[in-house]
Image 1: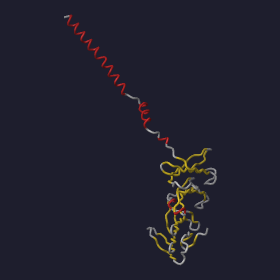
Image 2: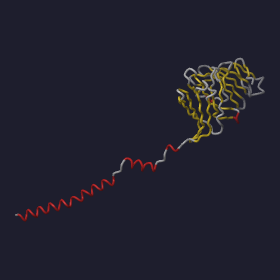
Image 3: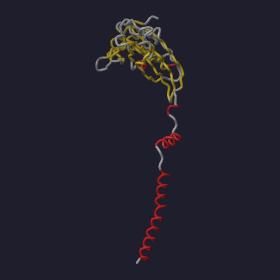
Image 4: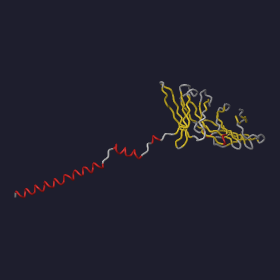
Length: 251
């Protein structure tokens, strides 16, 4: 009987000794497949390019704080950049507590050919200077396209005329208190435009081709011819100050 007990005890002891190494092996296998979050991030960063390395290329820079809006208290900064396409980044700063604070920022598409050619002037005759920059040219340079920003003195902010770059040779018309655009092609057209909710809308115009036609545009966007003259069309490239009566710009 004692011999049987000794044999049973010996078998149990041997079986425990054989199981213990397999348990340690399982633990070692699990440890070899676990990676920490830091290791995972480090490995991923080796295969992914750093997005911050893609910095737009600066083509041209313009800064002014002396002649725009409330002088010496406001600054405009324009950067012509390239990143897949050309665009202009516009930043508007206010001076407060001796610190320049960036309060507005815009990105506007631009052509790759022309420079900024910034113009600072009072476009709407409110006593404060506004600014524009060149977007491009067509018709071999005859049609200059510009983006216009107006300074709002009440809110001390910039108002972008959103479709200003769609109207070539745009300027303020002092007689009609509106804007007009001059489009040059085989002939020419003068478009008279109202500014409504930061958008320009045509309300009248003069076409100068084989004949000179003045027209208005009604609320349904239909043209109404108000005058036509076929006797005086030798020079087809005329810009008009008024459409009724017809008055040419005199530079």
